[in-house]
Length: 122
Ligand SMILES: Cc1cc2nc3c(=O)[nH]c(=O)nc-3n(C[C@H](O)[C@H](O)[C@H](O)COP(=O)(O)OP(=O)(O)OC[C@H]3O[C@@H](n4cnc5c(N)ncnc54)[C@H](O)[C@@H]3O)c2cc1C
Image (cartoon, helix red, strand yellow):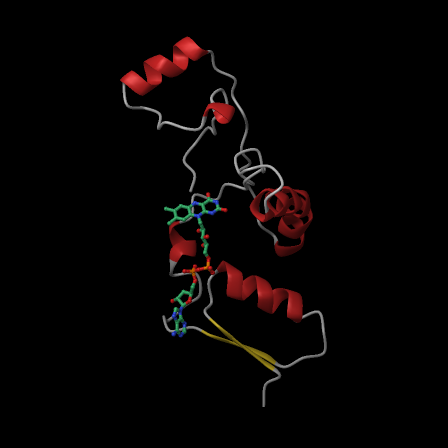
């Protein structure tokens, strides 16, 4: 008999199972594929989003910052190496116009004009 059944063994389900494993509970993760992390989690670019991209004050912005803070310790505990963070590159308006012309950058609201994330991300 289980106390908790988690449906889906992606990063969300596994993270919930990991947290709950710290309590005296019988937990099962039910995954429809033959292994964990075969859904969206498999396609992940492994970037730890730092929180500069989402609208300030939103839940996503807050969780990005909190997740970035927790990531090094969690990776150490789980034996995960090679954290991929994200960084901000400052670019001038002229560079952005050029990037837009060449189709390298999507249009964004004016407030985030000079901010962009480097590397492939979600
Ligand atoms: C191309 C790409 C790149 C990305 N890059 C990043 C990145 O760099 N950084 C980042 O933070 N995020 C990134 N993301 C987003 C991130 O990968 C997802 O938000 C995250 O993996 C979602 O995890 P999840 O556990 O919610 O879903 P999933 O990983 O999809 O897990 C859901 C699981 O549930 C299972 N399931 C579904 N239905 C059932 C059922 N009825 N019974 C049993 N099991 C079931 C599925 O098989 C799957 O294993 C990226 C996403 C994509 C697509």
